[in-house]
Length: 401
Ligand SMILES: Nc1ncnc2c1ncn2[C@@H]1O[C@H](COP(=O)(O)OP(=O)(O)OP(=O)(O)O)[C@@H](O)[C@H]1O
Image (cartoon, rainbow, N blue to C red; front, top):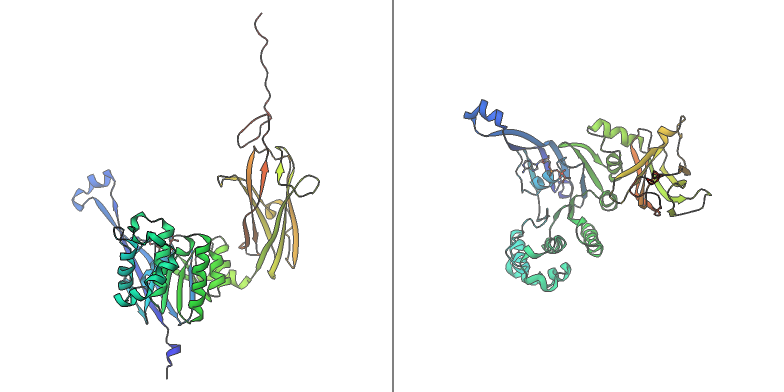
């Protein structure tokens, strides 16, 4: 006998999704086979043979590089896209928060859109009346509720859409990346709401590039690569696969990274002057030491550390890894270790520079990262300007007598 609890709330069976892409032909192609029209037809499989069962009460994260099929899978689960092959079964009331303003009509006001959106999501007019003030209150939109939504900022859009979605009392909430929009206070409010949804046993499917949300919120995560599921399981493991620099494109490669099970954290990053004292402002040509403290969270058989120094435009100025600087590997990482990169007489021009640190495990997968962990400044010099310091000299021929 099957109990209701063991029946998945979402079942995705052998789902594949094909998009047909039409591309303009080149002039040459048009001349050589002009009868066949001006456009190519190309098939593109965004999802291939996906099989998933999601139990009620799960918060599941879909992650993967750009174009891996996350949004397509989410839309297929939500019934917004029909699979080319296979089928999707769902139970219960659904609310979907997809890309910005999907479901909102730009020429209608916020108020009109709330009613329209709520009715699409299955609420009657009376039910919407009942929730209306709470929706507006949650969104923080205030008087803008009677403004056409085409004049809203992207943050305002998302706030209102999120407010509607959570008030329709869904059993399943699909969320696509929108949590990244909106200010910090609103993001916190959304995350609190998601947590209370979890406590109420609702099911949430989340697409995000913010990996910290995956480990903080999800109890299961799926890694997609090129339309395939390469991993399905523990969120921490899923995140470590992505941190490996998107190297895993097959389940086998993903499993290798998970099996290694290595985890670390960057505890501190400091910039030091030539005397080893903490320092954040340097002169061109100074020695700059970057000191990093790393801690193993799970045993790391062999590790390495990499450094990136970016200018304010996010361009790499210089980078290095322990692996290319040392003959002998750093060996196992246990507990805390401190390492230092010293950049002698750095010939960079004035400006603010950001330091990013990455820690690699024994499969060269990334096991920790601290983006822009520390910033240092190089003061103006009197000899040259621009990103590279040059010790310019100058001379003039004697004046003609
Ligand atoms: N309507 C469409 N027509 C043609 N191709 C599409 C369509 N929608 C998506 N694709 C393609 O399918 C692939 C998967 O897209 P999808 O949006 O699901 O990826 P994603 O993992 O969500 O990416 P991102 O992280 O960039 O949002 C991409 O290559 C995309 O260009």
